[in-house]
Length: 370
Image (tube, rainbow, N blue to C red; front, side):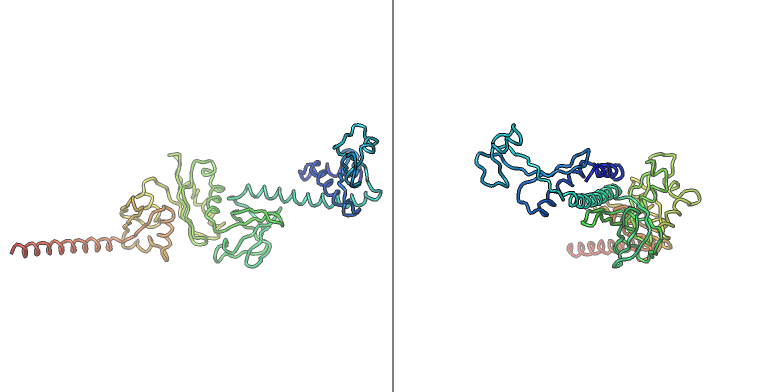
């Protein structure tokens, strides 16, 4: 090897961000194994690479002793003094044993080590970059499908969109650009594995943060999200500034902001609701687009009985109970929905039961008196 190696390592340090000294130390460690493997030596050796010239020297390490028993591992004091007059018993003497043909072996070994270290460093850089992007959105290009998993090219690496993280009914076409939400980045023997999702509620949250400047600036806050991927999402928002309407900010002029998010989610419906610290108001708003007449809450059980007009009952419950289910998830309250006529019938029945029980008590009282 020569000074060209040092220049090459300096270039790698600039381009890849791998310190030259780390590479040199790795090459020295690898050359020790290469020396022992090729020259069948059982002695202790160390390899030193000159940091300026790139020259490689191999030294046998021998312990200085009065009476050496093993010539491969020990050296007499007299022999040691000839090498270095400062050596004393118990010291380690360094004796150069660099083979003539070691240069070719060293060059091959150095190449393998450098390539391996570059690969490891690049993997480490990619891992750090995407690990910091966990819970964030990335845009990639769909490459292929493997065992129903979709592989997405992110430029420097690939991400995996597992079957469980795919929206039911959504098609993923080759070379199509798609936004996904990073749920996990983990190290593997083949490099970092990036798991992404199209179903996570965080995807909707991050899309709103990107699309609505008021959310990005912290004026409008997303309080909660409930989502059934591919079908409907409810999002509760709150404004810290009384002059800013949180719902209007998210909808945008003529609905442009929310429409951009709906388009990205391929037609998924989005209900934007104003958050309130008042449970009655929040629960009432959460059942949008249905109109609510009355909300009775039970703080201890965290449950609510909601009354809606007869013609709004099916809208409040939603198809297969979806609207009520999403509202309950959004608010964190158990919600029981009844129509006006159902509530009226319940009250009448309770009154009848009360009258009947009252009459029975009167009859029992009269019988006792007789």
